[in-house]
Image (cartoon, rainbow over the protein chains, first blue to last red):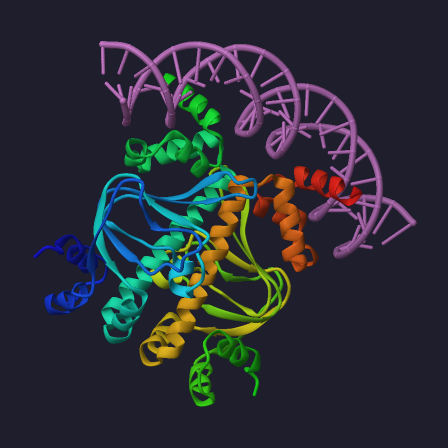
Length: 193
Length: 193
DNA sequence: TTCATTTCTTGCCATTTGGCAAGTGCTTTT
DNA sequence: AAAAGCACTTGCCAAATGGCAAGAAATGAA
């Protein structure tokens, strides 16, 4: 069956019977997004809860001065969604863009809700995804507060090597909260060690 | 009835019939926490999902150098919980402490789950709370990245005046990601305008 | 291959924030 | 009232990061 990565992912995060899993993934549709295209554009109400089977994405928005700020990187084998817009049905201030050609399985808000109401195990999955995202953000916020740019860089390169293979320096820089100039210098310092 | 603030809060966030509301709040227990006491201590698995009816709390943890870092302030009339520890049943790295005498209504993980499974409207409530927290964190992370300390201070004082009436300077400073020395200077600059 | 465009690096200097330590003022204890 | 403790402020200087602009390197198009 084609949706095997999705099945494995759901199973891993919230065990369910084979039949239940099939009932769940049946409602996901295959989706392809080419490099530089968007899963979500600001101003829209997000209607894609996407399991990213292959590729690499990023979320970004703009600060008050109009600079692009990367808010998140999404490697493959995880779900990609903008919680606020998707779940609250509000207009998104974020963009989600493919940094490489991407393939995955997507479900709409309506269908996801239907599954949440009818499949208790899947509710656990949904909550686990939300909590996971939340925790990741918390840790990042904390790191922003009490670590130097160099330490944040070191953490990122240790935990998410693939970011450096897929994203541009300026994307990584704004994600780390520094300028690309500074990141370039930090990287230089770092390579000496 | 005693739990009226809670009833109103649930009703506002996810409308339900009077009877359903009563069924929900019945499972919450009144809880009092005195100033400087803890709702959650690091090392514990959180088992309190608290609606804070009155008082003021903060969450904090320690950075790698052992400095206290305030991660969140909780004014009254909102829910207070550590999503990671409470929902994932993992050991908390955060502390939640009362900054004033506090009163609220608390429910355990088990009972909350029971309600989530049996009351669809309440599931919506639970999700809304999680998403809300998430959004607040995202905005904060973003602000940490692309705003100066002075701007972050200005935002905080405009949006959360009560923090300044309830928390110490050093708590606010670590929340803003600066030292109390710097905050003191910023505050001085600010009062000139 | 060659040219054009984009991405990344680097030098110079400015600005922001931090570290430390002393000092002020308020509150609590005795 | 004196002493002690805590919260906050301030001066001095250091360290981290930014802004700008020029140049180098990589990438993509013709």
